[in-house]
Amino acid sequence: MTEAFAHPAGSIAVAKPGGATRWQGKLLHIHVAPSASYEMEELQEAECIAGRGIVGDRYFEGTGTYSPKPDVREVTLIEQEALDALSRNDPPLQDGPITLEPRDHRRNLTVIGVPLNHLVGRRFRVGDVILRGGRLNFPCKYLEELLGLPVFLPLYNRSGLNCGIERGGIIRPGDVIELLDQ
Amino acid sequence: MTARLIMKLRVEKMRLTTPDVLHLQLVHPLRPVLPEWSPGAHVDLRMPDGRVRQYSLCGDPDDRSRYEIAVKREAGGRGGSIWVHENLREGSEVHISTPRNNLPLSDKGKHYVLIAGGIGITPFLSMARMLKRQDKDFTLHYCARSAEQAPLLAELQDVCGKNLQCWFSADRRRFDPAAVGPYDENTHVYICGPQRLLDAVQSALSAWPEEQVHGEVFQMTVDENFKPEPFEATVASTGQRLLVPADKSLLDVLRANDFPLPSSCEMGVCGSCECGYRDGIVLHRDKVLPTSKRQDRLMLCVSRARVSVTLDL
Image (cartoon, each protein chain N blue to C red):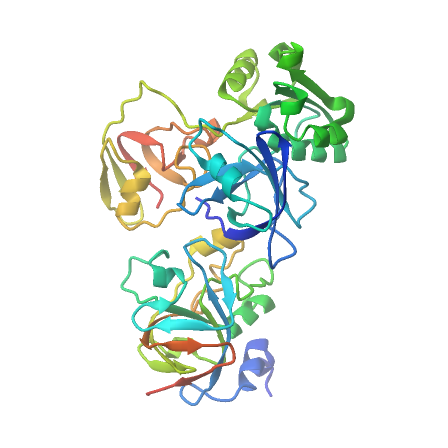
Protein backbone atom coordinates (compact mmCIF):
# COMPACT_ATOMS: atom_id res chain seq x y z
CA MET A 1 0.00 0.00 0.00
CA THR A 2 1.34 3.42 -0.90
CA GLU A 3 1.82 5.99 1.82
CA ALA A 4 -1.19 7.98 0.61
CA PHE A 5 -3.53 5.06 1.33
CA ALA A 6 -2.12 4.74 4.83
CA HIS A 7 -3.71 8.11 5.64
CA PRO A 8 -6.54 7.61 8.18
CA ALA A 9 -9.29 8.67 5.77
CA GLY A 10 -8.11 6.24 3.05
CA SER A 11 -7.25 3.30 5.24
CA ILE A 12 -10.57 3.44 7.08
CA ALA A 13 -12.64 3.87 3.93
CA VAL A 14 -10.92 1.05 2.06
CA ALA A 15 -11.78 -1.40 4.82
CA LYS A 16 -15.53 -0.72 4.47
CA PRO A 17 -17.53 -2.81 1.98
CA GLY A 18 -19.79 -1.27 -0.70
CA GLY A 19 -19.64 1.86 -2.81
CA ALA A 20 -22.01 4.50 -4.13
CA THR A 21 -24.68 1.89 -4.97
CA ARG A 22 -23.90 -1.40 -3.28
CA TRP A 23 -23.55 -0.03 0.20
CA GLN A 24 -25.60 -1.12 3.19
CA GLY A 25 -25.72 1.14 6.20
CA LYS A 26 -27.12 1.14 9.69
CA LEU A 27 -29.05 3.56 11.89
CA LEU A 28 -27.07 4.21 15.08
CA HIS A 29 -28.99 6.91 16.98
CA ILE A 30 -32.29 8.81 16.80
CA HIS A 31 -32.53 12.27 18.37
CA VAL A 32 -35.31 14.84 18.49
CA ALA A 33 -35.71 18.29 20.06
CA PRO A 34 -39.05 19.93 20.84
CA SER A 35 -37.98 23.35 19.53
CA ALA A 36 -35.01 25.29 18.13
CA SER A 37 -32.14 25.51 20.69
CA TYR A 38 -33.59 22.79 22.94
CA GLU A 39 -31.26 19.96 23.90
CA MET A 40 -31.67 16.85 21.74
CA GLU A 41 -33.30 13.79 23.37
CA GLU A 42 -32.38 10.27 22.31
CA LEU A 43 -35.19 7.89 21.33
CA GLN A 44 -35.13 4.10 21.19
CA GLU A 45 -38.04 4.17 18.79
CA ALA A 46 -39.45 6.96 16.65
CA GLU A 47 -42.56 7.41 14.59
CA CYS A 48 -42.01 9.00 11.17
CA ILE A 49 -45.02 10.61 9.50
CA ALA A 50 -44.95 10.99 5.69
CA GLY A 51 -44.73 14.62 4.62
CA ARG A 52 -44.33 15.82 8.23
CA GLY A 53 -41.36 14.54 10.24
CA ILE A 54 -40.55 12.62 13.40
CA VAL A 55 -43.27 12.85 16.05
CA GLY A 56 -42.06 15.16 18.84
CA ASP A 57 -39.36 16.82 16.76
CA ARG A 58 -39.18 20.54 16.00
CA TYR A 59 -39.49 19.99 12.26
CA PHE A 60 -42.65 17.93 12.85
CA GLU A 61 -44.04 20.58 15.22
CA GLY A 62 -43.03 23.51 12.98
CA THR A 63 -40.95 25.05 15.76
CA GLY A 64 -37.49 24.53 14.22
CA THR A 65 -35.18 27.02 12.58
CA TYR A 66 -35.53 27.03 8.84
CA SER A 67 -33.22 27.96 6.04
CA PRO A 68 -34.64 30.54 3.61
CA LYS A 69 -33.44 28.25 0.75
CA PRO A 70 -35.87 25.71 -0.78
CA ASP A 71 -35.63 22.82 1.62
CA VAL A 72 -37.28 19.70 2.92
CA ARG A 73 -36.34 19.07 6.50
CA GLU A 74 -38.68 16.40 7.77
CA VAL A 75 -35.71 14.31 8.88
CA THR A 76 -32.01 15.19 8.93
CA LEU A 77 -29.17 12.65 8.81
CA ILE A 78 -25.43 12.79 9.44
CA GLU A 79 -22.66 10.22 8.95
CA GLN A 80 -20.88 8.77 11.96
CA GLU A 81 -17.82 8.78 9.70
CA ALA A 82 -17.91 12.61 9.60
CA LEU A 83 -18.04 12.72 13.40
CA ASP A 84 -15.13 10.26 13.59
CA ALA A 85 -13.13 12.50 11.24
CA LEU A 86 -13.75 15.48 13.53
CA SER A 87 -12.48 13.52 16.51
CA ARG A 88 -9.34 12.60 14.50
CA ASN A 89 -8.92 16.29 13.56
CA ASP A 90 -9.08 15.29 9.92
CA PRO A 91 -8.53 17.62 8.13
CA PRO A 92 -6.86 19.86 10.70
CA LEU A 93 -9.01 22.96 10.04
CA GLN A 94 -9.27 23.95 13.70
CA ASP A 95 -7.05 23.91 16.77
CA GLY A 96 -7.51 20.25 17.58
CA PRO A 97 -9.86 17.25 17.58
CA ILE A 98 -13.54 17.93 18.27
CA THR A 99 -15.71 15.34 19.94
CA LEU A 100 -19.23 15.75 18.66
CA GLU A 101 -21.58 13.33 20.38
CA PRO A 102 -24.74 12.20 18.53
CA ARG A 103 -26.81 14.41 20.88
CA ASP A 104 -24.70 17.46 19.96
CA HIS A 105 -24.83 17.74 16.17
CA ARG A 106 -28.61 18.39 16.05
CA ARG A 107 -29.34 16.06 13.10
CA ASN A 108 -32.07 13.51 13.82
CA LEU A 109 -30.39 10.33 12.63
CA THR A 110 -26.75 9.33 13.09
CA VAL A 111 -25.94 6.67 10.49
CA ILE A 112 -22.92 4.59 9.56
CA GLY A 113 -21.98 3.17 6.17
CA VAL A 114 -24.34 5.50 4.28
CA PRO A 115 -22.85 7.81 1.60
CA LEU A 116 -25.19 10.74 2.26
CA ASN A 117 -23.66 13.02 -0.36
CA HIS A 118 -24.73 10.49 -3.01
CA LEU A 119 -28.33 10.46 -1.87
CA VAL A 120 -29.52 13.88 -3.00
CA GLY A 121 -32.72 13.22 -4.94
CA ARG A 122 -32.60 9.47 -4.26
CA ARG A 123 -34.96 7.22 -2.35
CA PHE A 124 -33.65 4.95 0.35
CA ARG A 125 -35.11 2.99 3.23
CA VAL A 126 -34.40 3.13 6.95
CA GLY A 127 -36.03 0.00 8.35
CA ASP A 128 -39.55 0.19 6.84
CA VAL A 129 -39.53 3.94 6.39
CA ILE A 130 -38.75 5.40 2.96
CA LEU A 131 -36.86 8.71 2.77
CA ARG A 132 -35.96 10.89 -0.21
CA GLY A 133 -32.76 12.89 -0.07
CA GLY A 134 -33.31 16.64 -0.40
CA ARG A 135 -30.67 19.34 -0.01
CA LEU A 136 -27.27 18.62 1.47
CA ASN A 137 -27.21 20.15 4.92
CA PHE A 138 -24.90 23.10 5.39
CA PRO A 139 -23.01 23.78 8.62
CA CYS A 140 -24.15 26.95 10.34
CA LYS A 141 -22.76 29.49 12.78
CA TYR A 142 -25.81 28.91 14.96
CA LEU A 143 -24.54 25.39 15.74
CA GLU A 144 -21.09 26.77 16.56
CA GLU A 145 -22.61 29.25 18.99
CA LEU A 146 -24.89 26.69 20.55
CA LEU A 147 -22.05 24.24 21.15
CA GLY A 148 -19.27 26.74 21.74
CA LEU A 149 -17.15 24.63 19.37
CA PRO A 150 -15.60 25.61 16.00
CA VAL A 151 -17.49 23.02 13.93
CA PHE A 152 -18.33 25.19 10.92
CA LEU A 153 -15.23 24.50 8.81
CA PRO A 154 -14.70 20.83 9.68
CA LEU A 155 -18.35 20.02 8.86
CA TYR A 156 -18.14 21.69 5.45
CA ASN A 157 -19.42 19.23 2.80
CA ARG A 158 -20.20 16.56 5.40
CA SER A 159 -22.86 18.27 7.46
CA GLY A 160 -25.51 15.69 6.55
CA LEU A 161 -28.63 15.44 4.41
CA ASN A 162 -32.09 16.96 4.75
CA CYS A 163 -34.79 14.48 3.75
CA GLY A 164 -38.49 14.14 3.12
CA ILE A 165 -40.48 11.12 4.33
CA GLU A 166 -42.22 9.26 1.49
CA ARG A 167 -43.50 6.36 3.57
CA GLY A 168 -43.91 6.68 7.30
CA GLY A 169 -43.46 4.09 10.02
CA ILE A 170 -41.44 3.20 13.07
CA ILE A 171 -37.62 3.32 13.09
CA ARG A 172 -35.21 2.00 15.72
CA PRO A 173 -31.43 2.10 16.19
CA GLY A 174 -29.94 -0.91 14.39
CA ASP A 175 -32.32 -0.61 11.41
CA VAL A 176 -30.73 -1.37 8.03
CA ILE A 177 -30.40 1.51 5.54
CA GLU A 178 -30.39 0.70 1.80
CA LEU A 179 -30.69 2.48 -1.52
CA LEU A 180 -34.03 1.76 -3.23
CA ASP A 181 -33.57 2.90 -6.80
CA GLN A 182 -30.52 3.96 -8.72
CA MET B 1 -25.26 37.15 18.79
CA THR B 2 -25.03 33.98 20.76
CA ALA B 3 -27.39 31.06 20.82
CA ARG B 4 -27.72 29.02 23.96
CA LEU B 5 -28.69 25.40 24.34
CA ILE B 6 -31.80 24.77 26.43
CA MET B 7 -31.65 21.76 28.72
CA LYS B 8 -34.39 19.94 30.58
CA LEU B 9 -33.16 19.86 34.19
CA ARG B 10 -34.73 18.17 37.22
CA VAL B 11 -35.42 19.96 40.50
CA GLU B 12 -33.39 17.80 42.86
CA LYS B 13 -33.86 19.84 46.04
CA MET B 14 -36.00 22.80 46.91
CA ARG B 15 -36.32 24.83 50.10
CA LEU B 16 -37.45 28.25 51.26
CA THR B 17 -34.43 30.33 52.26
CA THR B 18 -36.77 33.12 53.43
CA PRO B 19 -40.60 33.06 53.57
CA ASP B 20 -40.75 34.26 49.95
CA VAL B 21 -37.49 33.08 48.34
CA LEU B 22 -37.20 29.54 46.94
CA HIS B 23 -33.72 28.07 46.64
CA LEU B 24 -33.61 25.42 43.90
CA GLN B 25 -30.94 22.84 43.07
CA LEU B 26 -31.16 21.61 39.49
CA VAL B 27 -29.49 18.54 37.97
CA HIS B 28 -29.44 16.97 34.52
CA PRO B 29 -31.39 13.69 34.50
CA LEU B 30 -28.83 12.06 32.17
CA ARG B 31 -25.56 13.97 32.28
CA PRO B 32 -23.43 14.09 35.42
CA VAL B 33 -21.65 17.29 34.33
CA LEU B 34 -23.38 20.55 33.36
CA PRO B 35 -21.87 23.25 31.12
CA GLU B 36 -19.32 25.39 32.94
CA TRP B 37 -20.06 28.91 34.20
CA SER B 38 -18.34 31.71 36.03
CA PRO B 39 -19.50 33.84 38.99
CA GLY B 40 -22.03 36.48 37.91
CA ALA B 41 -23.58 34.21 35.24
CA HIS B 42 -27.32 33.71 34.88
CA VAL B 43 -29.52 31.12 33.21
CA ASP B 44 -32.82 31.59 31.40
CA LEU B 45 -35.75 29.66 32.78
CA ARG B 46 -38.41 28.94 30.16
CA MET B 47 -41.98 28.50 31.21
CA PRO B 48 -44.42 26.31 29.25
CA ASP B 49 -46.25 29.35 27.87
CA GLY B 50 -43.03 30.70 26.31
CA ARG B 51 -42.18 33.28 28.97
CA VAL B 52 -38.47 33.51 29.78
CA ARG B 53 -36.94 34.75 33.02
CA GLN B 54 -33.30 35.24 34.02
CA TYR B 55 -31.93 33.99 37.34
CA SER B 56 -28.35 34.33 38.57
CA LEU B 57 -26.54 31.14 39.49
CA CYS B 58 -25.77 31.17 43.21
CA GLY B 59 -24.03 27.81 43.65
CA ASP B 60 -20.39 26.86 43.47
CA PRO B 61 -18.90 27.21 39.95
CA ASP B 62 -16.50 24.36 40.76
CA ASP B 63 -19.43 21.99 41.36
CA ARG B 64 -20.54 21.16 37.83
CA SER B 65 -23.05 18.52 38.98
CA ARG B 66 -25.80 21.06 39.74
CA TYR B 67 -27.02 24.58 39.15
CA GLU B 68 -28.50 26.58 42.03
CA ILE B 69 -30.88 29.52 41.67
CA ALA B 70 -33.00 31.49 44.13
CA VAL B 71 -36.37 32.89 43.07
CA LYS B 72 -38.22 35.57 45.00
CA ARG B 73 -41.98 35.50 44.83
CA GLU B 74 -42.89 38.87 43.36
CA ALA B 75 -46.62 39.36 43.89
CA GLY B 76 -46.60 42.52 41.77
CA GLY B 77 -44.28 41.13 39.09
CA ARG B 78 -45.00 39.79 35.63
CA GLY B 79 -45.95 36.33 36.88
CA GLY B 80 -42.73 34.37 36.29
CA SER B 81 -41.72 33.99 39.91
CA ILE B 82 -45.26 33.04 40.92
CA TRP B 83 -45.21 30.30 38.26
CA VAL B 84 -41.96 28.96 39.75
CA HIS B 85 -43.29 29.03 43.31
CA GLU B 86 -46.62 27.45 42.45
CA ASN B 87 -45.56 24.86 39.90
CA LEU B 88 -42.08 23.56 40.67
CA ARG B 89 -41.64 20.76 43.17
CA GLU B 90 -38.81 18.32 43.86
CA GLY B 91 -38.73 15.97 40.85
CA SER B 92 -40.23 18.54 38.44
CA GLU B 93 -38.48 19.12 35.13
CA VAL B 94 -37.81 22.63 33.91
CA HIS B 95 -36.23 24.09 30.77
CA ILE B 96 -33.04 25.98 31.58
CA SER B 97 -30.55 27.54 29.14
CA THR B 98 -26.80 27.15 29.38
CA PRO B 99 -25.35 30.05 31.43
CA ARG B 100 -24.36 33.48 30.14
CA ASN B 101 -22.36 36.05 32.07
CA ASN B 102 -23.26 39.74 31.79
CA LEU B 103 -21.61 40.55 35.12
CA PRO B 104 -18.19 38.88 35.05
CA LEU B 105 -15.69 39.48 37.85
CA SER B 106 -12.82 41.62 36.66
CA ASP B 107 -9.43 39.99 37.24
CA LYS B 108 -7.81 43.43 37.42
CA GLY B 109 -8.91 44.39 40.94
CA LYS B 110 -7.02 44.01 44.18
CA HIS B 111 -10.02 44.93 46.31
CA TYR B 112 -13.66 44.17 45.55
CA VAL B 113 -16.78 45.79 47.01
CA LEU B 114 -20.00 43.87 46.37
CA ILE B 115 -23.28 45.62 47.19
CA ALA B 116 -26.49 43.59 47.14
CA GLY B 117 -30.08 44.54 47.80
CA GLY B 118 -32.38 41.63 48.75
CA ILE B 119 -32.62 38.97 46.05
CA GLY B 120 -29.82 40.85 44.23
CA ILE B 121 -27.50 38.83 46.46
CA THR B 122 -27.64 35.78 44.14
CA PRO B 123 -24.68 36.54 41.80
CA PHE B 124 -22.52 37.60 44.75
CA LEU B 125 -22.58 34.31 46.65
CA SER B 126 -20.59 32.61 43.86
CA MET B 127 -18.40 35.71 43.43
CA ALA B 128 -17.58 35.69 47.14
CA ARG B 129 -16.67 31.99 46.93
CA MET B 130 -14.28 32.68 44.07
CA LEU B 131 -12.72 35.77 45.69
CA LYS B 132 -12.17 33.82 48.89
CA ARG B 133 -10.58 30.93 46.97
CA GLN B 134 -8.31 33.37 45.16
CA ASP B 135 -7.43 34.96 48.49
CA LYS B 136 -8.59 38.37 47.23
CA ASP B 137 -9.61 41.19 49.51
CA PHE B 138 -13.37 41.82 49.39
CA THR B 139 -16.30 43.29 51.32
CA LEU B 140 -19.88 42.24 50.72
CA HIS B 141 -22.53 44.77 51.78
CA TYR B 142 -25.90 43.06 52.08
CA CYS B 143 -29.01 45.24 52.35
CA ALA B 144 -32.27 43.59 53.40
CA ARG B 145 -35.26 44.20 55.63
CA SER B 146 -34.12 41.77 58.35
CA ALA B 147 -32.00 38.65 58.84
CA GLU B 148 -35.15 36.52 58.40
CA GLN B 149 -35.82 38.16 55.06
CA ALA B 150 -32.25 38.01 53.74
CA PRO B 151 -31.98 35.17 51.20
CA LEU B 152 -29.01 32.76 51.51
CA LEU B 153 -27.76 34.51 54.65
CA ALA B 154 -26.42 31.35 56.34
CA GLU B 155 -24.39 30.38 53.24
CA LEU B 156 -23.04 33.93 52.96
CA GLN B 157 -21.95 34.01 56.60
CA ASP B 158 -20.21 30.69 56.08
CA VAL B 159 -18.39 31.83 52.89
CA CYS B 160 -17.65 35.45 53.79
CA GLY B 161 -17.06 35.44 57.56
CA LYS B 162 -15.99 38.92 58.61
CA ASN B 163 -16.09 40.18 55.02
CA LEU B 164 -19.90 40.27 55.21
CA GLN B 165 -21.55 43.48 56.38
CA CYS B 166 -25.30 43.33 56.82
CA TRP B 167 -27.54 46.38 56.62
CA PHE B 168 -30.96 45.41 57.94
CA SER B 169 -33.54 48.20 57.93
CA ALA B 170 -35.47 46.50 60.76
CA ASP B 171 -32.36 47.10 62.91
CA ARG B 172 -32.28 50.73 61.72
CA ARG B 173 -29.05 50.10 59.85
CA ARG B 174 -29.23 51.50 56.34
CA PHE B 175 -26.47 51.21 53.77
CA ASP B 176 -24.73 54.45 52.87
CA PRO B 177 -22.77 54.44 49.57
CA ALA B 178 -20.10 56.44 51.42
CA ALA B 179 -19.15 53.07 52.97
CA VAL B 180 -17.42 52.23 49.66
CA GLY B 181 -14.77 54.74 50.59
CA PRO B 182 -12.73 57.11 48.44
CA TYR B 183 -11.74 56.32 44.86
CA ASP B 184 -9.09 53.65 44.52
CA GLU B 185 -7.75 52.55 41.16
CA ASN B 186 -7.46 48.95 42.39
CA THR B 187 -11.05 48.66 43.63
CA HIS B 188 -13.91 47.20 41.60
CA VAL B 189 -17.48 47.76 42.77
CA TYR B 190 -20.37 45.44 41.88
CA ILE B 191 -24.01 46.31 42.55
CA CYS B 192 -27.06 44.13 42.10
CA GLY B 193 -30.52 44.90 43.41
CA PRO B 194 -33.40 47.34 43.02
CA GLN B 195 -32.99 50.27 40.65
CA ARG B 196 -32.94 52.80 43.53
CA LEU B 197 -29.92 51.05 45.09
CA LEU B 198 -28.11 51.04 41.73
CA ASP B 199 -28.95 54.70 41.19
CA ALA B 200 -27.80 55.67 44.69
CA VAL B 201 -24.47 53.85 44.42
CA GLN B 202 -23.80 54.85 40.83
CA SER B 203 -24.51 58.48 41.61
CA ALA B 204 -22.28 58.38 44.70
CA LEU B 205 -19.51 56.88 42.55
CA SER B 206 -20.13 59.03 39.47
CA ALA B 207 -16.52 60.22 39.48
CA TRP B 208 -15.22 56.64 39.25
CA PRO B 209 -14.27 55.23 35.81
CA GLU B 210 -17.13 53.20 34.32
CA GLU B 211 -14.92 50.08 34.04
CA GLN B 212 -14.64 49.87 37.82
CA VAL B 213 -18.36 50.11 38.68
CA HIS B 214 -20.40 47.14 37.51
CA GLY B 215 -24.15 46.79 37.88
CA GLU B 216 -26.84 44.35 36.86
CA VAL B 217 -30.58 44.80 36.74
CA PHE B 218 -33.35 42.40 35.86
CA GLN B 219 -35.88 45.12 35.18
CA MET B 220 -37.12 46.70 32.00
CA THR B 221 -35.85 50.06 30.81
CA VAL B 222 -38.53 52.52 31.77
CA ASP B 223 -38.49 55.81 29.92
CA GLU B 224 -41.94 57.30 29.64
CA ASN B 225 -40.69 60.21 27.56
CA PHE B 226 -39.33 57.99 24.77
CA LYS B 227 -41.41 58.21 21.58
CA PRO B 228 -40.49 55.46 19.11
CA GLU B 229 -40.14 56.59 15.49
CA PRO B 230 -40.12 54.38 12.38
CA PHE B 231 -36.74 53.72 10.74
CA GLU B 232 -35.17 51.61 8.02
CA ALA B 233 -32.88 48.63 8.65
CA THR B 234 -30.59 47.27 5.92
CA VAL B 235 -29.28 43.71 6.10
CA ALA B 236 -25.60 43.96 5.14
CA SER B 237 -25.26 40.46 3.65
CA THR B 238 -28.29 40.62 1.34
CA GLY B 239 -28.91 44.34 0.89
CA GLN B 240 -32.53 43.77 1.99
CA ARG B 241 -34.15 46.98 3.31
CA LEU B 242 -36.80 46.61 5.98
CA LEU B 243 -39.07 49.26 7.44
CA VAL B 244 -39.34 49.09 11.24
CA PRO B 245 -42.61 50.81 12.19
CA ALA B 246 -42.88 52.75 15.45
CA ASP B 247 -44.90 50.01 17.14
CA LYS B 248 -42.62 47.07 16.18
CA SER B 249 -39.11 46.14 17.35
CA LEU B 250 -36.19 45.36 15.04
CA LEU B 251 -36.39 41.79 16.32
CA ASP B 252 -40.11 41.53 15.37
CA VAL B 253 -39.50 42.88 11.87
CA LEU B 254 -36.48 40.63 11.22
CA ARG B 255 -38.38 37.57 12.42
CA ALA B 256 -41.32 38.46 10.20
CA ASN B 257 -38.83 38.48 7.33
CA ASP B 258 -37.55 34.95 7.99
CA PHE B 259 -34.49 35.72 10.09
CA PRO B 260 -34.59 33.11 12.87
CA LEU B 261 -32.92 35.06 15.67
CA PRO B 262 -32.34 34.02 19.26
CA SER B 263 -33.80 36.16 22.01
CA SER B 264 -34.75 35.75 25.61
CA CYS B 265 -35.98 38.57 27.86
CA GLU B 266 -36.93 40.89 24.97
CA MET B 267 -36.62 43.88 27.30
CA GLY B 268 -32.94 44.74 26.95
CA VAL B 269 -31.45 43.07 30.00
CA CYS B 270 -30.28 39.59 29.02
CA GLY B 271 -28.05 40.12 25.97
CA SER B 272 -29.40 37.18 23.91
CA CYS B 273 -30.21 39.16 20.77
CA GLU B 274 -26.95 41.12 20.51
CA CYS B 275 -26.12 41.98 16.90
CA GLY B 276 -23.45 43.99 15.10
CA TYR B 277 -24.16 47.12 13.07
CA ARG B 278 -22.08 49.11 10.59
CA ASP B 279 -23.60 52.55 10.32
CA GLY B 280 -26.49 54.60 11.58
CA ILE B 281 -27.30 56.47 14.77
CA VAL B 282 -28.51 53.85 17.20
CA LEU B 283 -30.77 54.62 20.19
CA HIS B 284 -29.66 51.81 22.45
CA ARG B 285 -32.21 51.62 25.32
CA ASP B 286 -30.84 48.33 26.69
CA LYS B 287 -29.21 47.81 30.09
CA VAL B 288 -26.64 45.22 29.16
CA LEU B 289 -24.21 46.55 26.52
CA PRO B 290 -21.22 48.39 27.97
CA THR B 291 -20.49 51.80 26.47
CA SER B 292 -17.33 50.41 24.86
CA LYS B 293 -19.42 48.09 22.66
CA ARG B 294 -22.17 50.52 21.70
CA GLN B 295 -20.30 51.84 18.68
CA ASP B 296 -20.87 48.64 16.72
CA ARG B 297 -23.22 46.36 18.68
CA LEU B 298 -26.90 46.70 19.54
CA MET B 299 -29.73 44.72 21.11
CA LEU B 300 -32.37 43.89 18.52
CA CYS B 301 -35.21 43.70 21.06
CA VAL B 302 -35.17 47.31 22.31
CA SER B 303 -32.64 49.31 20.27
CA ARG B 304 -33.90 51.61 17.57
CA ALA B 305 -32.21 53.95 15.09
CA ARG B 306 -32.57 57.48 13.83
CA VAL B 307 -33.62 57.18 10.16
CA SER B 308 -31.59 54.06 9.27
CA VAL B 309 -29.16 51.40 10.43
CA THR B 310 -27.14 48.69 8.61
CA LEU B 311 -27.07 45.39 10.48
CA ASP B 312 -24.25 42.83 10.33
CA LEU B 313 -26.57 39.97 9.45
